[in-house]
Length: 86
View 1 (cartoon, rainbow, N blue to C red):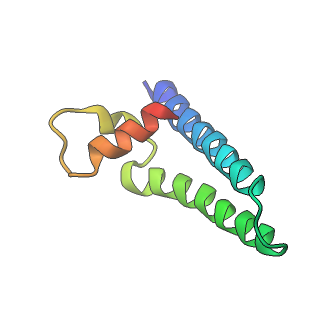
View 2 (view 1 turned 135 degrees about the vertical axis):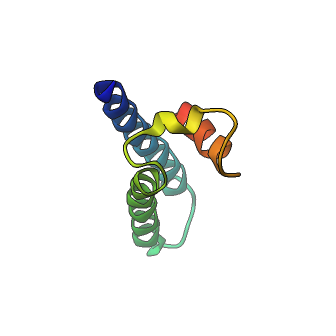
């Protein structure tokens, strides 16, 4: 069971990274002012690290707890949906 929990956590983190890289590339392809690229890099770097920290802070390594019904908190179905997308 611990292997499944760690695999799900790693897969969610990798999926979050892939989503953020895709969004970063979309922003990077836009016609923005010259020095806005630095801001785009920093914001997406913070979002990547914040997503990983948020997964761990809200659920620990046990992201399977998000999929238990009924949810204990209002945000659980939203985070479970995002983890499923990742």
